[in-house]
Image (cartoon, helix red, strand yellow):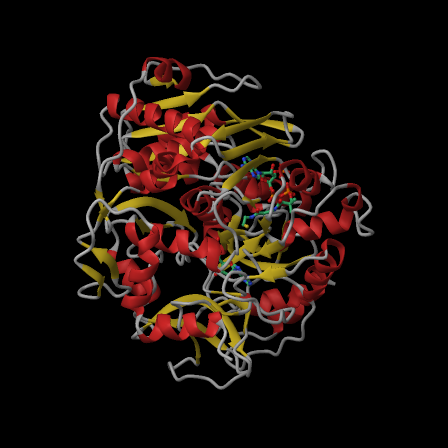
Length: 624
Ligand code: COA
Ligand code: AMP
């Protein structure tokens, strides 16, 4: 018998236009599209060209119009402050319409960019939806990034306004956002017209002449309605790490994104209107965009906005408490969160104290999930634990195990099978397809399905070069791995200089650029090395300038402070080693993988073309 999954998968590849046109029926269109898929001049394809819709209307207003205004749209639960609140769809509509009025009053127009630098509070979601409502393009910046990173994004996105909070709350410290924001604006060439600041009582900010108080503006605001935008108009820009110091501005369109999000909630996550869906991530990452905000609301679910950590706020039972209190049906988090919980409560005693009967599935993504973590969660929770693979670029799962289309056997270590719309292949270095079980570059045959990136913000050349030039006819994911004989995908590593620290995507190139600014550093290399909790952490190898002699602990302390100040605490840069020279190929390329293998204790073979094999012995001595 053909399963729903097989039927959907085959249908989506054989007749993508028919498949996605049907899925698009789940969305309200002000004007239907002229063409479902247009591949002219667009390597990935453009979806629903000619169609007009509004993402906010679909995520909020239409549920109210359908008589479900009283249903809870958003649950806010802060383990940091103890605050709990709920917003119904009608209340969310009220708040979003008025904040859209605030933006309009401040001259934000369709197509203008708005940067949102906020913690996990409902106002962040309100600000995002308000942008969508008036056709403005939001760009949310994760709160764990430093001023310098925010400045890069300000210069690239050129926002008319910035929406920020006075502070974020991390265990044991209050993060003052306003000084970071001020420093970023001072560094940036582009100057926004002003900033709207949400004052939190834990730390109020001193407002300047160009700052507005969120509550003052809202008190005077008149609601505004949803404007129709083109399906191909950008909904948001989300910056993510690439190989260079300049982050990539992933663009998301309105039409394809709304269709894919709405469809994925049922097909992949097996939830529907009225279910409580919780993505325990941060709105600053793609998981937060897709599955805290847009996916659940487009489907009419209840979403949970959680401020806190899986452990220590107050303990490793924090996640289970939220599930029990709010009747969560599906939880989505990163394996690192489960590793942290398991580390603190391996017997599951805290877990056993809560009624988790509402939970049907646990989804994991963001980094490779080790089989031991998957098995522990499955055993303790007694529900399917599903690893699925995707990226900021894809916007939703490329591979997984679809609860709505019919789940198949879970193979630990694998990220499941390709999801509908994604023709996943593994190629060798010259672009030839590999056999089952053989490792190579993971690619997706073009066109890409709706919801995936149609562009990089104002950088067509980098878009093509980063994703399409290397393997013509395919999207290059940047990940490497293999597909087994049953069609299961195993994502093993990156092919570029991107690392994954506690589910947070970072560029080693950026860290190298920062270390190189230290006055005593002549040269450096950074690699990601294995970490029990965070999956990977960055490790620096630095060569000092001639005639410089420094005590290593003191120097490393300075390097740590530099990375924290320039990139942000989220980099978790702690480890570094001073070495005499770096291993390089004869053409001068630093052998980062060799360095990583040495630290991780894997066997390394000396590459035949290394300029001086003795370097490896020197470094091995330093590591011993
Ligand atoms: N604003 C300011 N600082 C932040 C921040 C934010 N939004 N988020 C993290 N940071 C800081 C932390 O306070 C910490 O600072 P410290 O060095 O002073 O302790 C640093 O950045 C690293 O944070 P984090 O990566 O969260 O590590 P942690 O050691 O505090 O906690 C885990 C470890 C595993 C509990 C945590 O990483 C986690 O919950 N991960 C889940 C990741 C996730 O949801 N990923 C999204 C993809 S699904
Ligand atoms: P991000 O763009 O921040 O979502 O990070 C995407 C990257 O995280 C991918 O390219 C992978 O390297 C990694 N990743 C995400 N999910 C998985 C997974 N399930 N298994 C292995 N790696 C993953």
